[in-house]
Image (cartoon, rainbow, N blue to C red; front, side, top):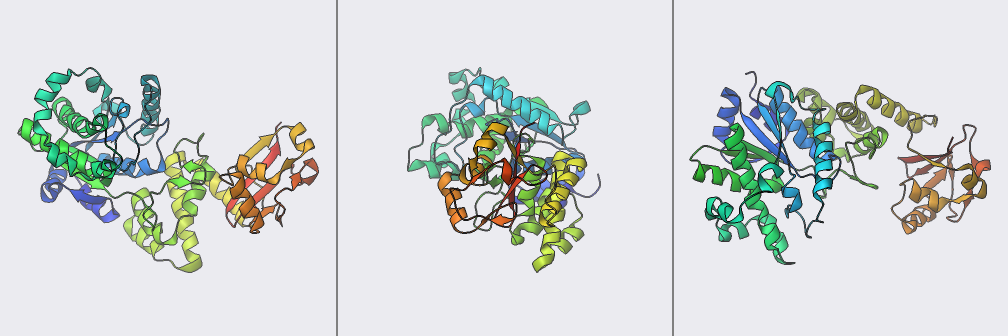
Length: 411
């Protein structure tokens, strides 16, 4: 094997915690390791938040190690209490299976599953038909309730009331690790740092029950400078599915991140050499916008392909360069009848995702932050018709400096 992937992950800023640092580094440097990362199938697409763990999987596979992507067909039926103040909505088996299928399709874009180079597994295979008494005898005996209650993931729920239903989550995730160890020789679990308690549970279970070495490693979570998880836009989550978050919107999300986060995101979410990452991260003032453009382009290229990344970049330049003509600007279509009757500005903004609510739209308009075809509009009850469209048959609304949306008559 070439350069130790542990050093690569460390230099690029992934590693937050390890169970046995020196042993993990030595192991990753000398042999092919089978490791797993879990994905609970709570939606029909992975998010920008998941992408960091996907990047780590890609680094590991490139270094010769074997990933297992574990789809949580079983655990999704419980819901992980980590980082949540409320219990998760219960989903049907059919919805969970559909979501898991979507995840596999997306992951296949990044991970090579051919010829046993990676494995896709689903914990529904062993969790849904468990014999409860047998499970308690085999697995439950290895868990101390006192120790579990000190875990960070449960502390946050204790005030509101932690159900026994959710209390089982750590034991089930630990059992996943044990099963993957038995089935595939999986010796390492990777995940976000909010999974630390659950990972420790699995490592401890394998070491106690199988008397075998097992290891855990967590990654830092992508957060804003205020500590809020990144990957959320005005419209909600930033999805990897182009039908849920268009390549243009995806590009714009990364193009508009905080200056202080550029170097970190370049290290974690692109394959650019670290010398280049540091050079771009050191740019100041107006020049940092060039670094943001590189970041947005590189991530969009990885997720949506070079063609879509180039189209998104050109659409962005058309807008910010004052050109205002591009087919790739996010667009909402209305019938000719609707535009003939007229549509008020607030409705346009809410429908196009430029405002979270009508009151949010009204506030932005009153503060002077909204233009229509580059003319500032301050009357929130203003109505637009076909006659207000430009020569291309388009209304272009801009909110602030960077949020744009086009409106056209459907063909």
